[in-house]
Image (cartoon, rainbow, N blue to C red; front, side):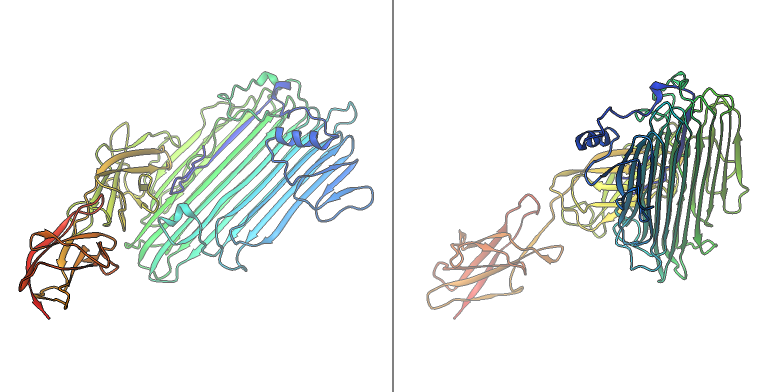
Length: 635
């Protein structure tokens, strides 16, 4: 289960594992293509879901992609997007990048291999910003390897794929849009993804994946505004159709694997370590969130084995309660879903999941799930540790599908067995409101406003409690979006500086992306917006006379303000001695940047003039006026 954050990225992680003994129907077979032509190769890549643009196509008995060509007799390229085609030889692909810049770039590698012999591919990416300038955005790493051994009737070949991805981030960056609403010192890994698809009906398939993310932030001022997010995914498919994923809902038939005799092996390790140090800060925010997501799908009548290790560690310092710092730690909300391992009684799988959160006084939510159904043996262990509370560990073994699940909240014990995303939530009816900011007493156009919403459980209508990130936005208006953590009553509130929406009403949207056992929710409600009141006064204030020139003209002036600030671009209508004043040079009195509008006009003869003026309401601002005001003439 993956979370698609609208404004606040929330924790989501899972492991989905499928394996079985089955068949032609279970093979990951792309659309047939004539690989001897460029057009056929392009069609083949598209059938695999890959964009053929930029792919180098290699044809030969021995194909090599990487930085160190083996020499004569090899077809070589240094491209990181390559299709290798060999009828009975060897394909080798190496895509390596180390000490890469941490400046918010995207690093990717795609290798596609097809042969009647053997395929070997390696993708290794390392990003370390410790010696680089401040990152400008999120870090992304992607490795995709697709391998196929053709059935030639000769000695069976082998598929071997290895992916290693490492990210070390020690500097605060920008551009992490989903976190900017809550903090300013940011670290985000928007995607560390590894994908291996192997087809080999009679020979072995081996897949090895290692993913690691280490993030560290240290505050230097009196206020800590720290947020870390990490998203890690892997997908291993060994003789498993690309259209299938989650057993049994995907319609996969285990009997379809009976014709596959090649063994399947997968070894996966995921780890994330997040550390935030508030230093000497006494106020602020610390937020940590991670996403671990994985699938292993195996289809073979021979022995299938896999082992998956997922480890998450979150630490917020100092290791004491700091009353002025709001702390939240959101662990993986799902590690494991919809797993299958097939009919061979010798099949074996192990899943080991650990989560450790350390932050005194923090809101902590962990929810872990693994599920594996096997005709052989599958052992799963999930362990959660929070602060000083005794670790909670649950285990499952055998071939059943009962699964291993545990949800823990802030060190409270005992933990429960709620599944990730299993508790439906909603925004309480009537709680989506917009309230004025003092000294205002009603919500008005162009003023600051506070957005509010309360999140509750659907089953009990009880508030979810404190520390849940919620995004609030005035519908359809850019810049009127903010995020906040719920308080003990489940209410999230945040303030926008200027409400720029047209009266008389607009809509408030609230979004919760899910966390731990709590499922995602959204809501919307309309709220009233009043026109901004204005004030119109003669300028200069307190005047009792006005200058009359030799031709009988006087220049009248009025100043328009809202909340004491000048209001420009508005038309003012002047009246003299009970009649509409005819203005000249210019003919229309419009307020300038200082809020003042002038009207040069010729009043009726006499020793004085009675002046009134009015600003007629428009769609945004309320009307106002002054008068009658008697002004004597000076010459």
